[in-house]
Image 1 (tube, helix red, strand yellow):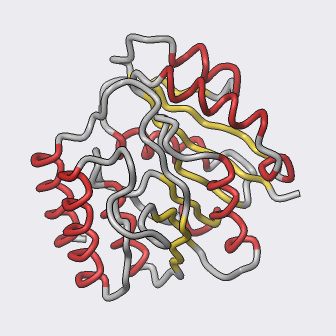
Image 2: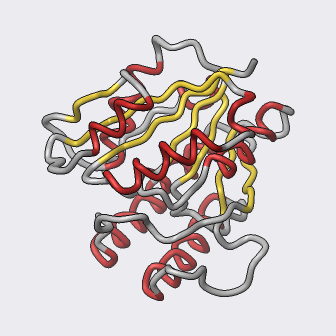
Length: 230
């Protein structure tokens, strides 16, 4: 049975985690894997996120002294080195992606077709997904196009919140980003490390609750700079 470790950074996402808990319990495809979770919970979290995370895993990291998605992943990577796993998944905590989508990303890795996969909200459909703001939509298109040019490989959805990796590809990937520039750095490291990347169309829905932490213009600028210097 394929061993899968799912890493979920969390800050005030109780509604999203409640959805993920119920989705995990009813998703049949994910049952064919040996699944373990790592939650990285920001110390600034003020809701019941820890309660729902603890129903899925006892492996909970307190993110202290640093903040942001990239920093959460860096802390999780230290834990990954002591875990026997075949595949590692990065999943947003807001409930916008399902475990059926996670399975769609795992399959090409199992078949040896790729080293890294990511879920695209735009492949297989036209226009802006329902529930996505126009600013986020057009900003992502611009950043994705810039990344495609910089890395000389097409990517339709750079800012997706769903990525999967073979264990060796992620554990040897040194991450330096601290925030939402994480995905831009991953795309650049895929090029530098000569890894095979494949995008998979996935179903996306609006976050289940809470507020987005993304500051559209500020974080967009940070992501743009990360694309250029990775």
